[in-house]
Image (cartoon, rainbow over all chains, first blue to last red; front, side, top):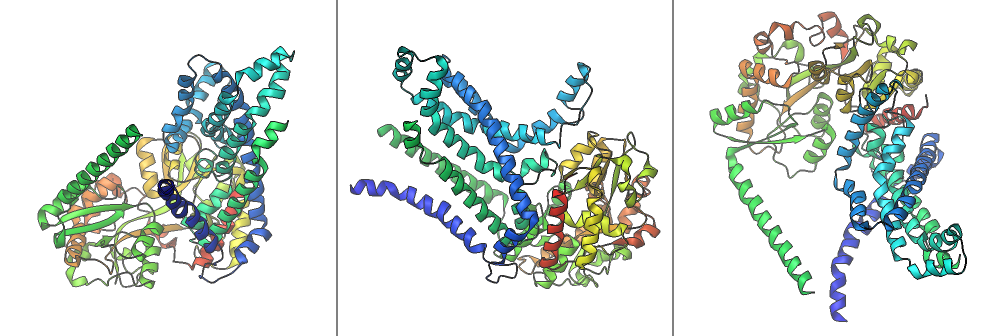
Length: 268
Length: 357
């Protein structure tokens, strides 16, 4: 018993120093205005300013779209991967891009999407003419989804791998069609993975800011852009922290909606 | 368990070895003590050969550290515990540092080479008697255009940017003050205005520009303009020169009605450990042959008139980078605005960015 208590020390230290302390600091900071006086005005500004509210709606909408696109691509991918012979190898190929720096990947897309980029050169080659690809919503969504896909595939893959094959066999034995088996057995059992994937993708998507500038040309503005500006340019840390707190609340809401996985998944 | 433990120990030993290696290497490079001069500058903003030359002449060892924004540099110096001997802030940051008493006054007797600085770059309003700063490089905000996409006389003035024929063809620099400067100058206002009404008017004017704005980007603009992604870019003269050296269809214009002029300056922070060396270094950089060599390497305009004579004619005669006297008179520097006003600029800018096409 004593030994176990010792093992918890690094974890507890980590949580306190790098999770709880920063959260408390952000919350604390959000109650100060630019002159260092205690105030709740930051929250009032946030809630009454059409700029911030519109930005929040836009961020949630984009995050939702990115998550939806990622899920639509990732679920079938994970489903196919699980049935392949060398599934660990194929999974590795999906994970591999996460080893490359995010900025490098984004810059690679600039090369692909630009006026004289590979994609436009191909389009010209097949006589479809060149198109404006960069700085569009579509290209922003594409790159964001590309970056998030591994984080969605992985939990779904694990959830699918955990399913006991005899359950699927039983379903088939009892006369269920392929579709029925999927709907009533595989999907509910893989739901925890789907939910974990949504959590892992939705929250970071809310505050993407580097890609909004590099690929979106700042025509897509998310809360992350505002936080960056408040911390780096205007030095209004209070307002930046307030938006940070809003993001944390959004995170808890998403966790709450997608939480409670086991029970619900089992009952359906 | 045993395997885990040995792996754990292995990693620890590796970390220890790396730490020792790092320590010994650092000790070798930094001589330590008063024989070191620490220079804190923007990245790639000095000819490395000059540092070697200075080390050779003075016997000091130079520690060269870099920053990427005035704000991050300021935060670091404000927090103390640093011992930078020479720092290179922009003009509005000099003003702020002066206000916060972070700078040591300069003894001009120890800087005889100050006489080589062109008088029009001395006694500017951010440091009226150059009591704290010496100009290092200067530049302007202006218009870069691609002659394959648009003729030069179509973009010679700020208000021409609003022309519908530039639809979806302009790139703006992602900086509230620079973008607002464009609108304020077009409306004949000061780029340092603190009047909310004037700023609001400027924002309304900017919103009309949105159909023409392709993107609002930072450093990436260089790459985009070089690749011909847009016809027009609003950016700084230094970046413009870099773009133009890659793509010869690009040209730079400073509109005659005015623009922003900026200065990067050499200063000595109050916390400097080696003031003696700092003076020597500044004086060394002011020496015409060194200033000329540095200007050739960095590519920005030097405020050193003697050094300018040593540069190739092609560089110094370029109207874009040394605008005619008439234009120079209309150029304005940014003042250090209060954080509140800066907040207003940025909030309005954020709103402008969100304004849908």
